[in-house]
Image 1: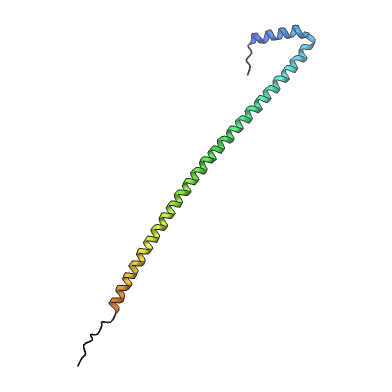
Image 2: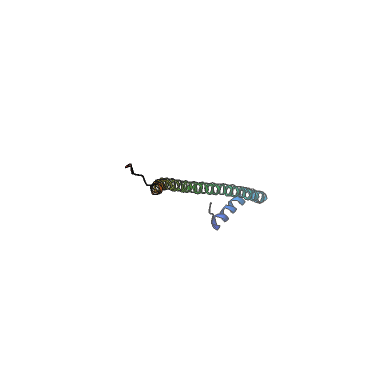
Length: 121
């Protein structure tokens, strides 16, 4: 705010005393004090409002960063799930093929031997 040195303050008081006179000076000092209080109060409320707005912007920025981080994590989870599904599908197809081969081999081993078509006497 405005900085007033002690010398300037004394000079201002002397000028006020000469201009207003000793009768009106206390009332003028009270009025000036009230005005200064209102100015400070207004300045403090404006400063507090600006600080709140800055905090809100900071919170919004943090929330945007958290949302972006969450979206990246979700994309990674989706990617891992897709890869896992592909691996399960591939493994399942291989297992089915191996099972079919094993079943075929079992069928061939368990099948009765074929009789020859040459007649017996």
